[in-house]
Image (cartoon, rainbow, N blue to C red; front, side):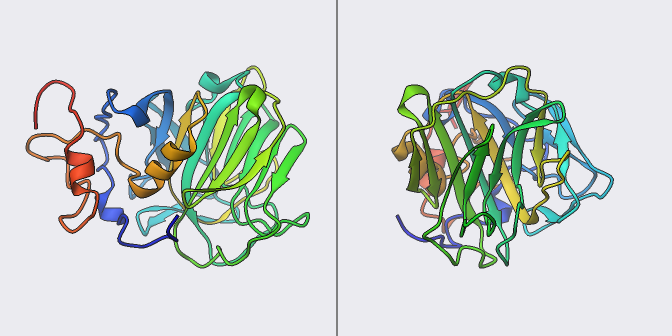
Length: 268
């Protein structure tokens, strides 16, 4: 898998605020239960456009730039989002893009919890407990990267955790699988909150930028993870007028891949 190339996508290619026309016929929309595009650009809340619910900023609010939400180690978003749709599941996927300029101890970029009890936390650029990059914690079970360094380079990187029931879990960075785990435990019942930029009760807060995050109630395949790395907005249906803004630039290698996908309710 190619290393991140800034030509793969640019912040201006993201759907504009209010553009929630997900193409539910697209294969990468199957099982999608939450999508937080972080495309607001201003304000103190971020919207999960699948659930139609906003997640609110904490006392310290994230800032907006570089096509995402910037977190300073104390700011975060937290709210119901799609948490209930993942309760008790051991078949799920969590996908997001993030960047940081340094490794950090307990910098949780994405978390899902039941009340004050965290159930899963993803640390994309971790340097604690022997990790040198991605670390995933779920109910006391951990698997982490101890062999790779250098991803905290200020560039956006693509992270994905998949859980496939009895087949265990896997972790991907920039479209390539880097870790597997035999752990088959499920997420807790009664999940109430999704956190972006932190595990709020911790606090275990992230310093860096998160660009967008998606949540599935199934385990994505390795091929699907690679597709999302190369074409992160594939599940958005274009409109005939493209009145909601360009999803890809004319020079993007994914122009045909995105705009040739089927559209609900008519042809382009």
